[in-house]
Image (tube, rainbow, N blue to C red):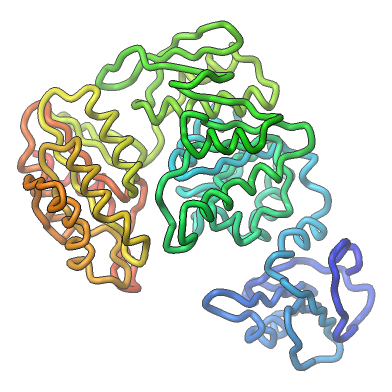
Length: 479
């Protein structure tokens, strides 16, 4: 036990049986095995201390707690650790042994672009583990993603699986919540990327300064001497670069930087781009489309360069990168208009996708979107203004309303339309009916954008989760 708690302050409340070989370590009492360790986390909804007896019945021989509890079995070791949740990852690393020297660990933070960047980097590097919004992936094993960045102990377990399968790279999205809650404090990254920062999650962070400070923490977790990557076209990225200074690879389209790029032209299926690095230019076609995806590509190139990959190899790999589920994902079943599903759920996300669509617009743009419930309310009218700027017609609908009334959410959204005098909109709360109506409006060469849910295959209304996939609904109503 001393090895598992190395470099961690603790108090032994009760010393149970000696010389036990602990077989697993869990914070879910249902998963504890005979001779296991149970970590009683004081959670956000449930208190693990209430499940100690259940863990012991399942065979736990050691209980880690963050507060004084009654000793219900003298044969069980009880250990008290203050701020236990923040030390969970370090305990996990101690349990599984030194893992971080056996993989390349890549972290990506920012409001938009994290998911796409993980897919691009995985494609460049070859076989890699991936942790993110859509799923967690280790080799051929796919695990449902409960959070963008899992709990710290779960991250350690995924790293351990990666090492056991002899996979050399792990690329992961790192959310501001995870950084603020210390879920990645135990890690040391080989490179990290900052994509951008726009208004989101202010229900949690309260203001942009707190949001920025949380994101900045990722760069403090770089291994000594390793380089991070920053998009300096972004206002917050430029500031981050100025504050960090050394060991940074800068990327951008408009700024003077280490790795630059531009879009040369579009087709209906891909775009031609130019990447500039080390006084040389490289031209290639990629399936990913839009200016925001060029930023994702440049950040990913920066990460690969930071890891020591040759630029010629990186460019060759980019030529075969595929579209990412729910990110500028086109639905094509022979219709005479373009249908796009995208995860954009912020003002900036809508601007990015709509700006890109506008670049090859031939007729109308019809946009369907809603705003999530129990989330930052201030972005709702701003999303409307963003949609109105580029759309010929907008349908406001329900997203994941959660415990809020979707009609009230829609009213708050359309305040943005009213503020700018935009009248080409309709409110249809039922999301399926909204998509059906939008498709009925489309004509040849129109572009239909259904935004907000992207890859998600569910809708949360109240406290219930229902199956719902924008892609399936679009296919259902296309003639």
